[in-house]
Amino acid sequence: MTKPLPDTGETLLPALRHSDDQRVRCYSSQFADLMEMRAPAHTVEAYLDGHEGWFRRCASPMRVEPLERNGYVLTLGRFGNFGFEVEPTIGLELLPQSAGVYRIGTVPPEQFQPGLRDLYDVEFNAALRLDEQHAASPITEVRWELDLSVWIKLPAVIGLLPESLVQSSGDHLLRQIVRQVSRKLTWKVQEDFHATHNLECPPRRRAQF
Image: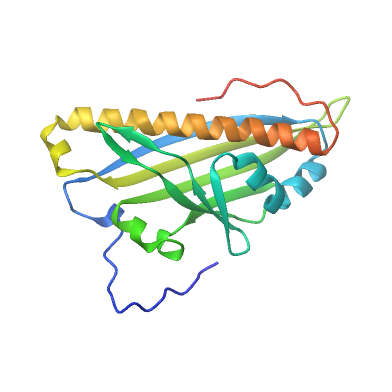
């Protein structure tokens, strides 16, 4: 879904992940979870393939805007640390499934809001794998994993704080965001699937952090 950039006559600076600016910090987090779907794998696949329906419903109340055929611009809400607030906005591409595996990748910010690349850079990589269980009634386990890295340019005054404090506080904040957003999204997808198929939804499971 590559989209040509408008010719503004300006040269874009390198993404923050390639910057040597001392104010740029990188924070990373991983997340894993499991959804139990009470249906055969082909039914779950048909549901996941129609992401234009469930993704927007399940991402609410986060703001979601469509981006070409398989992409979405997702605004997560306002988060802050050390009195510095950001409203993370990321572009995601939901790739067609291959051999029972669905992947979600990052859409570069210059494809939907070029000004963001000067503030932060995001690398979002997720994979969902379907595993149909052999049981008396059909059950498909959807296991998904997320790798997330964020590069952000912090105000110069934060450079006065100890480096270890800046890094650990940022990592902690990012983990909170990932757990909050990803866990709620997992529950909502599970509940939405069973509701739209008139099935009883299994109880929520504890996240595998």
